[in-house]
Amino acid sequence: MDFQRDSIRPLSNYETYLVVKQLHETNNERENGKRGKKGQNRTLEHCNFGLNTVTYETLKYLEQTPCIEQNPTILRQFYAEVKKFDLKKVELLQIINLHPTTPVELQLIIEDSETRLTEAQSAELIEIIRTHLPPIGGLNQPNVSNEIMES
Image (cartoon, rainbow, N blue to C red; front, side):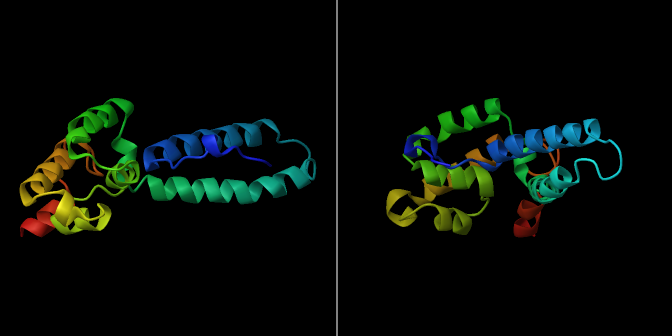
């Protein structure tokens, strides 16, 4: 299979979740529709077993991350708010995927953060992350990591 360089780009966990969820649902529909006599389509079922396992495990992992609470509107609002920090695309992607809530976590994501961001800007960015990117439990649940850090 030959790929063009222009079509390759990193995906956020949210985008990956949508693709894998659709793939998993399509495979389940296909599996349910192709049940026939015992032994029929055995080769096809054996080939799909690995794919089903990978999609299931990926979904299981992603459902434990904040990406399941994200949507295009939330992400657009977040991008608009953080535009002023002049972050790189990969840094934005990492922030969306990892959802940092402390200055240390932010420093690990942003290259040369000490020179590119002041302490006030770091605090502002963390506040934007807390307000625009939903925590794992949803918009109404407090972020557990924040409660631990404040204790």
